[in-house]
Structures are given as C-alpha cells and as structure tokens.
Length: 140
Length: 140
DNA sequence: TATTGTTATACTCTATAACTATA
DNA sequence: TATAGTTATAGAGTATAACAATA
Image 1: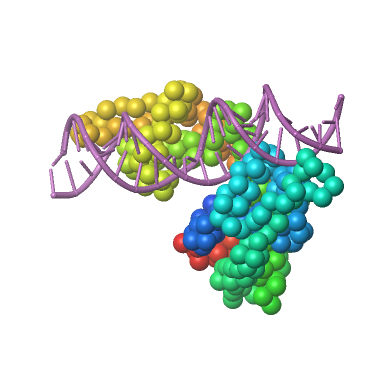
Image 2 (image 1 turned 90 degrees about the vertical axis):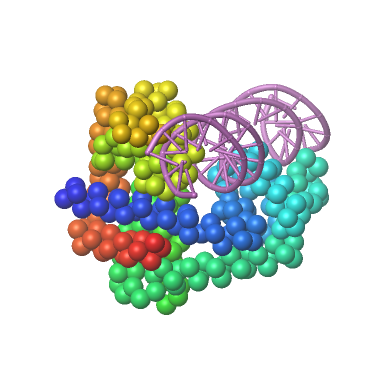
C-alpha cells in the first residue's frame, strides 16, 4: 500500500527532525555543533588531514572548513600545522583536548543508542537498520 | 548487544542527514525551504491561523514566523488578513497558489515515499515504522 | 498586566566568487 | 595552469530582548 510507505516516510522524517534536536544539546554544552563534531570525528578516525580532504569527507565547501577549523582552533580542539611537503597546504590535527572530546563523542553515541534503542528486540532492530540502510542507498 | 543498537543509531543519523538533502532540492525549485513548506502544510491542514498559533505548531519563535510569513507573502503563497475579533492578531491564509503548492507538497511526499520504500516487504515496512515511532516517543 | 506581532540585533550553517601563495 | 586556503559577500535558519498596539 502506498499509505504504508507514506507512514514509514513520515516517521523517518519526524525521526530526523527530533534526532537533530536530541544531539544538539549535549554537543552545545561542550562548545560543539553537529558539523564541528563531524570534524573532530573525522580527524579521530583518519588522523591529521589537510583542509581540502576534510571538505571532501564532510561534503562541504573548502571555505566552510576554514570557518569550522577556525572556531575549533580558537576553542583548543585542533591545531593547524604546516604541511611538510606542500607549502600551500595545512594539516589539521587534534589537540589533547580534541582527542578527549572525540572519545567523549564516541561514548555519547553509544549512550544515545542505548537510550533510544534499548529494549527493542534484536530482530526488529536488525530490520530497522536494514531498511534504513536500503533507503540510504537509494538516496545516495 | 550494544553494537547492534549503535549500528541502528548510526543508520538513523545517516538517514536523517540524507533525508534533509533529498527534500531540499525539489522544495528549492518552487521557492520553498523546509520551514516554509511546513508553514504551508500547517495552513493546509488547519486552515487560516494566527501567527502565534503557527509558532506553537512549528515549535519556533513568533519572531521567526514573522520572517517566514514575510517571504511566503512576498512570493504569493499566503496572505495576511486582519483578525475579525482581535485587532492585535493577524490571520495567515493560503492563496490559490499556496493551496496548489500545498497539494503538490502532498503528492511529492507520496512520490518520495514510494521511491524510497517501494519494494520493501510490508512486514519490514511495518517494523521500521514501529521502531521509528518508538524512538520518536523516547525523544519526545 | 498579559499577549500579538514587529524592530533590532546576533549567531550558526552554508555557498559562490575572487584572490594569494604555491605546485 | 591547477590547487590549497583565505577574504568578501550573501542567504537561510534561528534566537532573545525591547517595544508597539491591543486585550
């Protein structure tokens, strides 16, 4: 039925909206936003990166990365280092504080996951994730 | 397992991000954004509303509604009418163009739902919607 | 005194275009 | 000539605070 799909679609949209709000508050307490947190996570997983690489990873403009890194640097989460081989480029890397915050982000993710999905039967959880994965693919 | 929950959580977050992007493009073509479209949909479902009611429905500040209605009015989607009983208040209502656009929004939703969830077995669809509904509740 | 909407101000996300320094 | 990052500019989302008119 088309209406079943529409219902699923509406839930997905509703969920999206609320998820944003849910994640915002704890991030804000640490001086982060969704996109700033994404920078920290990227650096945590990949190690030091050139700004251009960050733009590609985050799917945003290089100009935007400049701004994100600016504030992240002002707040002591990251440092800019000259690139050893390319004098045009700049390596962005986590500070100790940045690393600690990235760790916290990981734990916060697990915590949020448990709060939201705790008690959902494993089979349903798997189905949910599989369907989500499918429509993510269709949106790619 | 905590990791199953984390996987589901990650899918939910990823889905959220992509959903936003998916919906943006067609809206933009019609001179709309997500929040402007939300105004049209609210008016379409509820009939003419006072701006304060819109702010409550959308969960945003009255000031923000002023801005949304301003541009929506400039673009011919809505009209401001004096409230018959309360001279402080303003009734916002859809124009013909606004109504037609709200109709289109409804059809676009159904179309998107079919494209994303088409071919997903009904049982999985129902489970997806049910789990989504559950976590929406937990986020409320 | 409480409420509706607006003016004023500000912060964040995000983009494009033009420019500098380097490759 | 192509690339990395920055300056300049701009539009959207969103908020609070102060203020007007009205209830």
